Structure formats: C-alpha cells, structure tokens
Amino acid sequence: MLRYLIMLSALTVSLNVMANQAEDDTSKLFKPKMSISLDYIPAENNMYGITLAPYHFDPDYSSWGYYIGYAASQEEDLALIKPAEGYTQDKMWRFGLSYSLTQQLSLYGGAVHYSLETHSTTGKTPKIVDGEPIWEKGSDTSWGGELGIRYMMDMGLMLGVGYNTSTDSAVISIGYAM
Image (cartoon, rainbow, N blue to C red):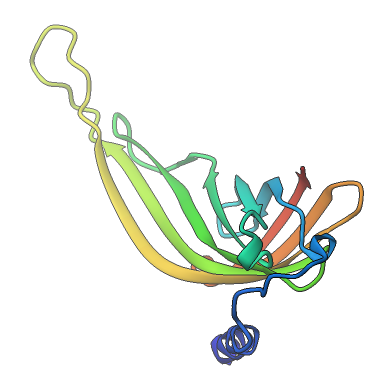
C-alpha cells in the first residue's frame, strides 16, 4: 500500500513538469543553493552519513535539483569461535532528484543502493614467515527507493525526513544550506 502511495505522489508532482518560460522579472526565480547535511538512518544497525544537495542552478529548471548521499554503520562483531574473527557493516548510497514546491519546502526522491558486507577469517595463518590470516569478504546488496521532504529555514538551517524502502526505515537529516 505504501508503494502505491509513493508512486501516486511522484506521479502527481511530475504531471506539470516543464521548463520555466523566460520572464522579465528574474527575482521570482529561485537562487542557487547547496546544502550539506548529516543523516541518521535508524535501521537494524544504525547508520550515519552525509548528503550533498545542490539545486536551482539552471534558470530554465529552477525548481529542480539533485542529491547524493553516503551512510555506513559501525562494524558489528560476529560471534565466532577463536581464532576465527569477523564483522559485518551496512553501507548505503543514495541519489536522486528534488523538486522545490516553495523557497523553503522541497520534495525529494531517488534510488538507494544498500549492501551488508561480511568480513571474516578462519584465523589460520599461511605457513610463511610473518603470515597473517586471510580475510574473506561477502556482500549482500539490494536496490530500493526513498521519498521525503526538506524544509529550509531563512537562516540556512535545513531539516529533512524521508522513508527508505531498502532498510524499511526513516532517513532523518539536519544540515546547512549556503
């Protein structure tokens, strides 16, 4: 049901998409901005990240922008019998488009690449001088989407909240727009 709601919202916003016509008064156009924000994603393993979101640089498409973000979790130890060692870590790349409804309020949505990496070793070393255990890496990746809103205050403070389908959780952002 939530996916249909997200698709319906995206369809509604995109129905009136067209280039802005040249106007005599350029003060109505949005001013170019760049926001940098710190993100918190309360997934199974809490992830922290950063997002860069430049927008309003093209006067013909002044309501549109884009963003890219990266988030990762702390390394979580695996309970393995000694001398084996191992840990897991979640990593996520987020990228997409944003659309400004007003000077302060914008919608964003895009794709998410989520991966759960597992690093492990048996703890056995090769029979050579100064031999180290050989680490193996496994990765479980998936793609998803996200949809959210951002609100920019006049002083430059930016707050954002969204929903991420890959982790089935929220994306909470706080940052600064310049």
